[in-house]
Image (cartoon, rainbow, N blue to C red):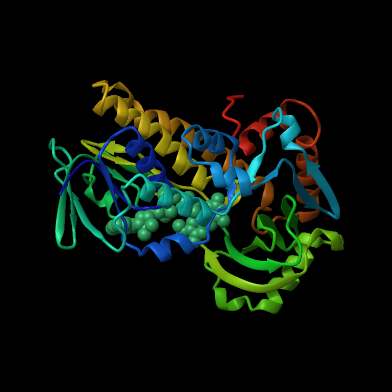
Amino acid sequence: LRAEVGIVGAGPAGLALANVLTRRGIDCVVVERASRARVEERQRAGLLEHRTVRWLHAQGLADRLLAEATRHGWCDFRCLGHTVRVDYGAYSGGHQHHVYPQQNLVRDLVAALELAGSPPLFSHSVRAVTDITSRRPRLECEGMEIECDYVVGCDGFRGISRAALPATGHRAHNRRYPYDWLTVLAEVDRPADGVRYAVHRSGFAGMMPRGPRVSRFYLQCPPDDAVEAWPRRRIVAELRTRLADGDPAGLPSIGALTEVRMLRMHSSVLAPLAHGRLLLAGDAAHVLTPSGAKGMNLAIADAAALAEALVARLRGRDAGPLAGYSAARLADVRRVLGFSEWLLDLLHLPPEAAEPGRELTARLAGMRRLATPGPGAYRFAHRYVGSGVRE
Ligand code: RFL
């Protein structure tokens, strides 16, 4: 087989990229290890930044999203029995998040590719990416080989594209945080009308909206804790203690827990993001914690930059944007990582804090600064909602 661009992985990064390239007349193929059903049912992220939605809309890929997503422009911080509401929509000049579960976006992007006559090859695993420094890099799959002009690795953090990079010349900046998060998808009796972050003596807890009857919850736990240590009764009790914290309205009534997983809290940013004719995008290139809801947004921002760069290279014979892809995206990724780590620091007390009472008072003061008009609040608002404006 032959394609101008071979894409490994049908997550948000690979699918968004393939859609734009196909619409611009570039012959590309997406090879995905999992079945279509599996890819379309994976429930992960759910908050789309302003800049992500603006770009998807400009590409004609946001019809269902705009019709069905709900919009959120404020979040609540809870600490020491106080709720601090941060109206980041107003402070960012009216920008909002769209709440749209990742699996819905994935379904839309698969359907659009199908309509364009270029559906992903599901249930095909890429075993290796080879010849990346030649003019004809290859995807080696079960029972076939695809010869390409460029290969884009969008195969997630544990994918095989990274393995094709030479042992020297690329560095991953890894960080392991001194806690983990239990992550829970639960049926709820009413929609979360905004994100809620709580800092409590017992640890952080968070609630993120996912739809009218579903919310995602996070609970800080000790590093390397086991999911078995968290039976339903303990999860609900800890959510009540940390998230509601004396405010019964702060927590919906929780029904079935449809997913309970332990999230090892780490981040990793690879640099550079390209070698020869292999380019990396999305989680294959960088992984952040879910604190600021940034992973899916960064994956799509990578796809947007790569789409422009590949079109310029393959149709305009301009190699400049492709040569600048890695540096430009890494600058953005590092800015976003800085924000996400700042938020993690706000939301977690240092392990074995000598004076947790004082730490909590300082956190509450920090949260109130985000809610008080001024440069700090405006900077937070733009970064959180992903307005695309550089403060
Ligand atoms: P994806 O979505 O992981 O897609 C990668 C795809 O590559 C396929 N693949 C291969 N295909 C062919 N051959 C191979 N050898 C292959 N190896 C892998 C995989 O099957 C998969 O379909 O990467 P992408 O496109 O970069 O998108 C990134 C986002 O998915 C990710 O950043 C977010 O979902 C992160 N994330 C969350 N972010 C949030 O903001 N809030 C959340 O609550 C949240 N929950 C999550 C998450 C990520 C999770 N994963 C990846 C472990 C929950 C989970 C479980």
